[in-house]
Image (tube, rainbow, N blue to C red; front, side, top):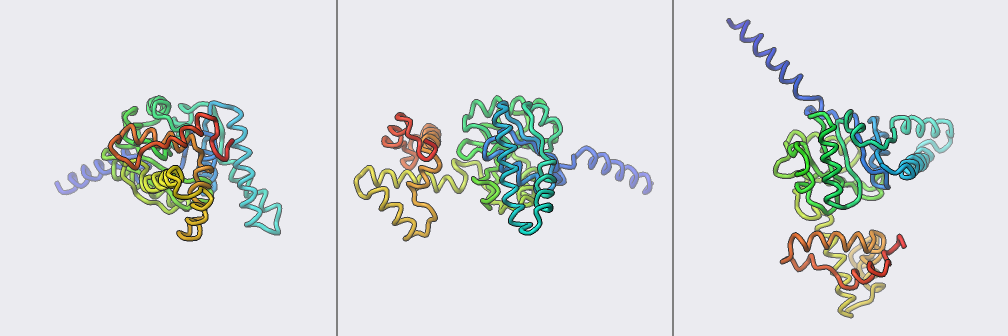
Length: 307
């Protein structure tokens, strides 16, 4: 009868909606961040600030302690600006947000209760893959996995898991609380619903999201990294000095930092590592050529601002 078919329809809809998790509806509330460095701590801070429950994971206890301090200090600056005259309100704001964050050594434990796991560890494909294989085994089937890689292929990392449809790139920029952009990266296998869910999550953090395909460097680094290396090549040819290039690009192109200043800030080792990966994958692309000068600096342990 009509009633029975209605009931069957209703129950099948109920079962369907029950089995498709809250995450499919875009409700990401519990986030695990693997990597207690500057990036991971920044992502944890802004997630907790909008009311999410956050777990920060790092194997190194010193990193976890530093992460807690980094987040507390960063929030104190925000709170001081917001509550200029009211020290008690500022303190309460910091305490309330920090109370939503916990710190642990176990990625598996953190993944077990997470709607979303964001990895922000060293830029090494094999290390990332072995981490994600463990997380994939420990996380509920509905959990979305994301890498904050800036230069590796999302598909290559996702290959270590059994949930390639629930794997995305979430590329934040440093310093995370300040920089407005989030590149949201999909592979050919990413479920559109998952992609839409992480995109909404990114916007809920106050970021402007830009959808990207899983191509080298996504949008920003695909243009930025070759540009910085072109500046180095210009100096290698003897066409200009680093100082003159920086002044020219700041005043002529409106860049806040010149290419050499930015190269130093990012780190020569990081820049060379990116190019090494890209030139290995695309040997015919001349824009991805490594620089002799940069390789020499790295070999001498001169890494830019950090040294």
